[in-house]
Length: 123
Image (cartoon, rainbow, N blue to C red; front, side, top):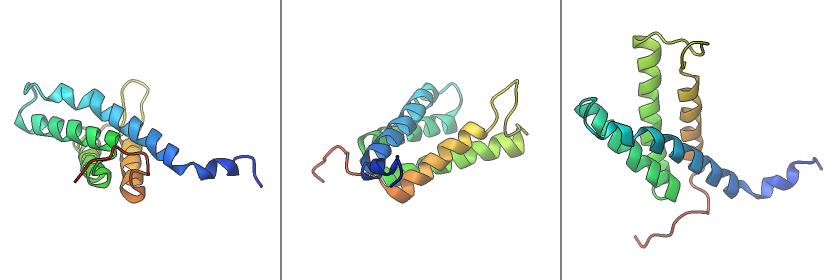
C-alpha cells in the first residue's frame, strides 16, 4: 500500500475543492464584465461566467455549467493564441497557460460531475 492510497477514499472532497477554485476564478472575473463597458457580447459572457460559477460552486447543473465555462475558455484561448498572438507563457505578460488550466478543470468537472457535496434543491 502506498502512502497516499488512503486519500483515494475522498474523491468528493477533491471535487469540492476543484469546484470552489473554478467558481472563485470565474466570480473574480465574470462580474467585472457586467457593467456594459466592454460591449454587449462581453456583458453576456460576464452573465454566463457569473451564473456558471454559482452553479459550479453550489453543485447544481455542474456538468452543464462546466461545459459552458469550458466553451468560454476555448474562446479565450483562441482569442489569445490566434488573434492576439500571446505566447503560452511569457515573463512580461500573462500567457494562455492559466486559461488552459481552467479549461482542464472544467473538463474534469464535466466528466466527473460535482461529487456528493452539493446543495440540495427540490427540482
